[in-house]
Image (cartoon, rainbow, N blue to C red; front, side, top):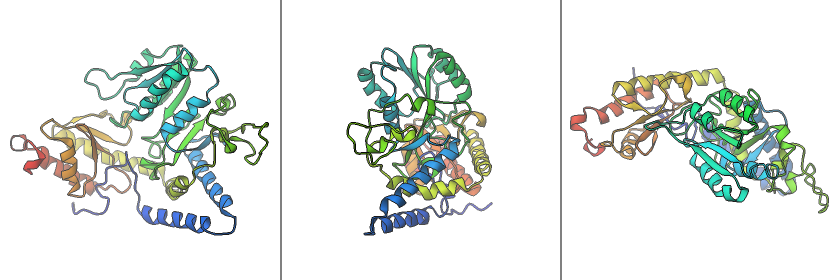
Length: 390
């Protein structure tokens, strides 16, 4: 088997920024088109830009099986969560609890910590078990009772690739009368997800990672029943059914996800991500998932053969598309990442955990190159105590 590097053959960063063949040219063409439209002195800009923004929204809705009028844009998952919290009916959170897990994205925890006093709720963070790399579903359930007003579930963890059993948790949450949200970010575009089966109240994601989009192109889904009960604090002319209604005394929210909009929508990030969205929705989803499953299986076999300890579930049915592994303290992970980068092998680390996510550009040859390079670093341990000895 040939191990000569090809562009992207050992690109393992789909948990961060997704890539596909032709992405650069697609983005350049999309942004050039925007520049042509926006720079034309003809007054036609908004019809074109808002139409493309709506296409972005519609493609996201198709991907997650969201009903018409339940999806809109947001800058990030964090700003999307702020929009949701600020939209909930008055008193929803007062004296109640918001439930999250320790392996959720830290930015969301930072936000909720800051909002707890203002909205008068208690933030409950379900911890890792001693020595664990992810939060178990049964531990989430053990903390989840009728005092939980909102539960934010992380479908796939960014630090372990552990995948939650969403149907199990939603079933429990319905018994508790909880508003249930899901952060889809780490697996959207790779694994199938349906916001209606089981029905969740809201969902958030960016268009990075497996969607191969750009920063700033986030999305919010909110179930229509909850939407109609929400009156967002963050509001503006685009929150209205008729954005061009200028009567200051007759503001009226739109009856769909547009009520989660506010001022003039930031559209460039959605337009820059639209080519990737079109590309992704034209692909065979089963083929993409099978390719990832095959390559993560090869990685797992090779890493375990080196004696490295996985920080991800060993069962592929219990994880997303990434594989994480713990490095011994004698091998500083950041130095390992830098050494691999010199060989056109791209991954990253969180502390001593290496994160690897093969996608459509990654090849079997690339995975074999990665394993060979890692083996040269970690074995033999007697003669390799730091990456600097390479």
